[in-house]
Picture 1 (cartoon, helix red, strand yellow):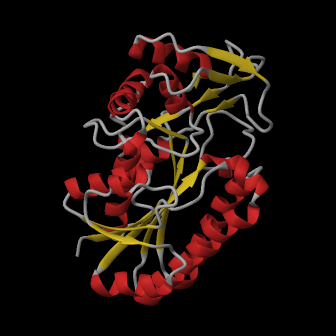
Picture 2 (tube, one colour):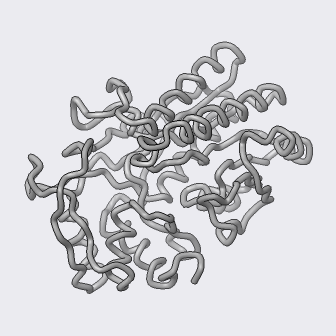
Picture 3 (cartoon, one colour):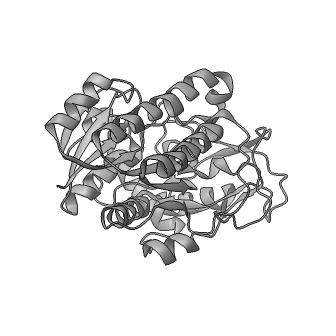
Length: 329
């Protein structure tokens, strides 16, 4: 039995996970409502259009495919929008996930891998952030992720489910083969915004503050390539399917790069000027976010293949150059 249900499998990370699963002998079964995902990114496995709250569709999927485990990539993830529309985030990210978990329990599927976030930590008290750091999210998006982690823990105790929460730092890069990449609408991630400026789709990059207590005054973030995220998901899957317990794991490179360092690296990679301007800080942006992934390295046997920022940007640039309009080009 090698069918893996990938909820959100038409999105940025989920679609690459499907490719990664297929390369490693699994059959991805994709459930995606295509609100943010792209049908063009679904190239491996079986596809069902719909949402986690559709119990009739879930019944069809679980009846037609003997599901061994579920991977969840289907959260709404715009932090600013979550502040303005918290009900939308709690409904999709929490209530719909609860429906999925209840359905899994009814069907006897016990292995669940959740795409969580460093947003569950809130403002960092110490750097690097470990899994033992206090979880005190500062927005509805982060709270929704933490709520699901807590639900998963309760399901593990009550129903003997085994769950893994993978807390990403800044997911970045594109498929090294150039088949899949990052295409959000609206786009809020820094690397695609920088590269869209490089290809002339944007006039300039906004730098939100240059007066932070960092070397060049701009925020520092920990960027992690999607291939390395996929590797961690596969290792977590194989851990659960072999009968080992779940847990929570940070996924980052353990090193940070400032906004200015990233823009300069992109200028080097692309050979483009990439205009930028400093604007006011965004509320709630910590100066530094860097994660410790020692637990994932030791427990899962995880070893990132693309830790260098330049390599991450190179893979993203390859995709954006060939897809200037995203999946529509």
